[in-house]
Image 1 (tube, rainbow, N blue to C red):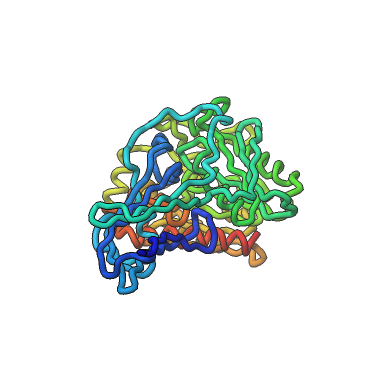
Image 2: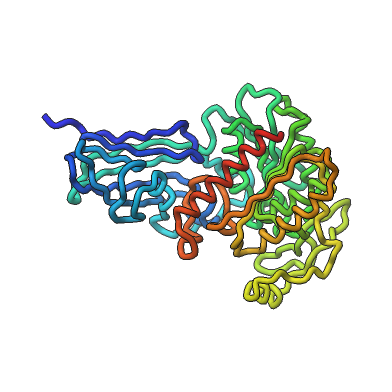
Length: 417
């Protein structure tokens, strides 16, 4: 009687930002098998916003079993398929949507799903005949995490925390020009699952909020901090803020106006306040306001932007007042960016931030910076598929950059909040 083929997933935890290994045993020794992976109910922070969440993601490879009838993603080489070579997370990172089907996005905050977990289905076939399959669950939001929706007046928030938590470290999460809350929420869920209280903030793009990213009041960040300070789950003296892209710009500006943050992490930042965005056009106004007044900003001019891309020289700063005075911030700061950022020159921005931080007193918090070689503007959560850069960088190096940047973010908050 033949032994049943077994498919097992090994991982230190069930979280989506942890690596895992697939091990298949009791195969026929030294034979080629096709491994197919399907991700079901999967939300990808790197995917287009309007991609139908019901669309499965898939990847497949061919591997040969060893002399003991065993295959391991960690130890065995992919001969062909979605990738080649040995890469423990290669099957996951190289997954792609089966269809690019778009849907209309819900406009009411309460209708936006949590996207707490997804399923990984592994199928093993030999000569087009199914040999075995198994399904596993992975979590963006651990089962012990709860959430609550809040109205911040000029913004919405969704706060995530562990049941029974008291006096925890807290992080405000701001996403970019995509608006809405899905991406900020995705990050906040994992922060919460890693031991923080995390508040994802939505400041435009939903019913009841500004339609566009223009003239957004900085005060929403202060209100977010006040909300967290009042929670019994939060240590009011240990609140941080995380922002990426336009959210990084907002986080840096807020850190100079709101004296609540012990630690700030920004991902793909600017050093100046940029003009707001109205649909696909510039808004002819600042992105941000304070006390009801627009903050000085740099106007966007397409011709100068394209020239800067071609010449690889930064556009001249026409309004010195638009520079973010981050040297006023006295807490810990980590800046993360990519040397080949395709949206704006975050590398130059981080260099300018570094110069400003050196002006601070010796009693100020730690400053760290990190630029990555093999990624672009979309440095997000570890291991998540990112097809945006496959023609420009080796995918395995992009995977390493995303993983390192995310782990460094988590560690920085743990060590400095």
